Image (cartoon, rainbow, N blue to C red; front, side):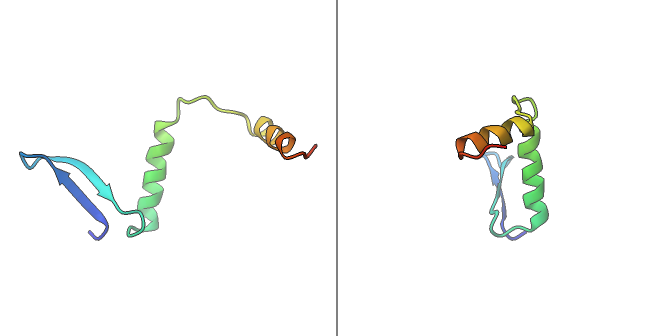
Length: 63
């Protein structure tokens, strides 16, 4: 597949997958985004309203 390479070790065992995000389809990019989101699921979050208020304050806007 164009834009995808499998990396192998000295025993020809697959160890990694290298994806050229400029060459792959939008579906692959969505898949990668999903993996990133899954890896961050246990990180602390900020409610949208709090983030929005902080951003408005930082930019001199008041709601």
